[in-house]
Image: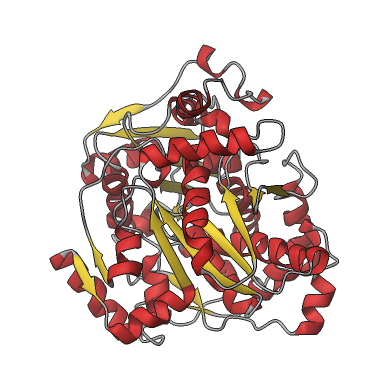
Length: 470
């Protein structure tokens, strides 16, 4: 398998090189040259695999330059940190299925990819006798998941930018109370979009990127998307094999388009079993407007009770654009230049028709989000509790299910409800049960610096605190 850029400016490279490059050197996003097709014989075989075995089967299609025994070891080590043997278990709640993606060490779906990516980085750096300064931006969960994936690793230092006072208190503490000396947190006085723009601008400074050995943990890194493809396939095959499902839809709380893009790749691999992807947004609904109106246009970020989705510019959208534009990198490059200049891309009716064959979408406001948490709690078995991001996905699924082809619908539970106790308490009148991983956080001393959204200040901080190499 070889990889190229959405903007066509790099020669095809192998998987290991994509992990280390992160953002493509031409400013585009890295994608595989081919999406593997999965035949019915393979589906039958995969349907009997446990999660780790399936992860190996799927990932080995994309990471064919890592020896099989070594890849199995990386996968086993990554998912040994999860507290459920299924890794991403399914649970029936009413007419919907909930896929619990919060059984990793930081209780969020980002652990599924970032535990693996941290181990990949460590292995590749050992292989090359190299070092890495990881730079990432987070709207809440990526930061702690990335930190837990690489904390204490001697060849790595990690710098995470988060929007100051715009993540939940639990999310902030999970990031900033990690004591390992290779961890650095930067609270940016702005929005997540400001953080993400800083990261992209720094990665586009190729001289700085090379000189300071920068690596990416954001979903601009293809390895993040690759690892997430697995749980879509796992859920779809489980429902096909055990429930006789002829079609499976997924409802995905969406901000940066990375998770749902993994679903799109899984859909391409398992068509026609995976039928439709429900793109669920909160009031920051640039992606819903794209699906419903055929316009991808910037707006103002609105702070909500689902803060990890408070994003206006979705960095992974460019990957889908590549396929929507018939894999034409010149057209993608032109569209992204126009978006940077005008803040908007419009689409033809023919293109919009193809978008709607992949996605349905709904925007859920905060009132409906709270009502959904309350309804699931009252209707679910033994008072089942969901977090506000998951509630956005559940609400969108309930609204759109009557308009979808017959099939089973899976809602992605992207975070443990205890990470958002204020929203859960407001909806249900009760505190969510707190897992052991969150106990005692408030008694720890946070470590972070506050900065304005200034690229040069962030660069200087990396220069001062990062690892130095030859």
